Amino acid sequence: MDMWRFTVKATILTLASVGAGTAFGQGANWTTPRTADGQPDVQGVWDFRTLTPLQRPTDRGDQALLSEEEAAELEARAAQSAIDADRPSEIRTEPLPVGAPVGGYNNFWFDRGAGVVDDNRTSLIVSPETGRVPALQPGVEMVTLSLGEDLPGSRPVRVRAAGIGTDHWEDRGLAERCLLGFNSGPPIVPAGYNQNFQIFQTSDHVVILHEMVHDARVVPLDGRPHLPENMRQWMGDSRGYWDGDTLVVESRNFTDKTSSFSPSVTMAAGDGTTLNLTERFTRVADDTLLYEFSVNDLTTFTAPIVAQ
Image (tube, rainbow, N blue to C red; front, top):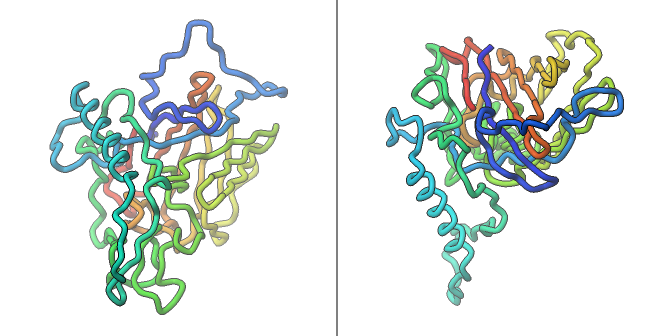
């Protein structure tokens, strides 16, 4: 199955970096830690921030990898941008124009990461080879709204942020309504801030708890069947199992009020009823968790979304 892969690496609330699994070779003497009942131990607090975008910037063309110099320059620019944004603001003495925005979110709230993925890819997406979301099926629309202004649209609003008006609560995005986090998925996609999740394990369940909107997915591991098709949930219906040392989580039964996939917080394609999602969690070092996911929905997209 095609997988969307990136690595989250943490030591309790501290991210290392996001990168391909092959970039993190296991030490010769390292072995997978085990819980008291013998399961691979994937517990911990994991951070998934990165400067590498989901989609390859269009000006990169077919460039799949950054040079070391390009990666260093990008990271230096990001560091300088953060320094500049943290400088004291000018003191304003005159009142704002009537109706003008007062602003919000000082820069210290944002946690965009300090580095690119370890193999210097230009995007998390590796297939299609363009590094971008594949083409949509005929008749499917990529809804694109704006954080700067409300744009015309119809309900239900499936983007995570932005909206189509203020006449009704359903005119706003799902994250604005705190129904789903804008980066917690599922699947998990780096964005903005609060880019942490925690995994708890028992012998027959795993809990994936997100910092963003504190979404918690309780995943049974006991082989029970999925819920009936007519029972739909915001985060889908998840079932898990162990494939060697890898935790595999398969999710379906998403509600039609969510998108099939959102390339950004202001974009949404399809709806969740046709999404089949597979996630894989593999601990590859004491402070490194390899997270992979596969978005398979050929009703919405012309190909699976594959990333690392």
